[in-house]
Length: 307
Image (cartoon, rainbow, N blue to C red; front, side, top):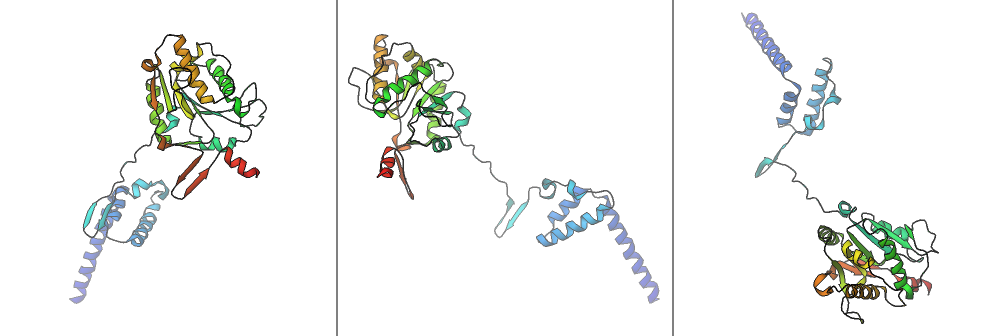
């Protein structure tokens, strides 16, 4: 009697095992993986069961490498004491990039032979920037080489030759900018400035750090460390007869020449030009000091090295 009961129990267990096996075989791959993910086992147990799943299905033509990471790890439920919920990574905020505007502006960097071209190209690698060198500067990194060479006191003449070059290609860009080698700018801030000027390029806009009014009449000159203007301003300048300047400050010369140009055209510069004042806490000249950064650049550094 006991043997009969034992045989019946064994037969029943065999039937149950067979049904379970058949039920598992009818599950598709995704359902099997989800069952593994929903279990309360730790990572080791999950890996062990996953290997068994691969082994059991390999003979049926299943290839483990066909599973993607999304198949194995769909949106997981994050479980912690006091918190149960679905963890989803929030979208990252896209930061504005000057690369987006590269076809609409040009930034010029006048160089002398003592200034490091490689450094400035790395510094502004995400900007549409050209280095402008004197005729005697034969370095490979010079994007534009002028016809003449200029000492420091003749920078107004160098600037005039730069502008004559721009006048021959004045319709290529909507905004033009000039920056000194030893100037640091907040690129996020300059993006906003350039975007505004590009969107309003048909207006007369002159951006920079205004200095005192020039000595030859109305008008404002922007500091040469960094200034920008719309193509409309450039077109006005190119239409005027600008004499060859004498020695002096190149930024003051440009402000004076532009003012004289508008006077000759009977244009009231104070009402027709929009002067945009730069935020000086976001533009640094010759040095940058903040927290654990103490950085200097420019002629004074070269003079120290020669001592």
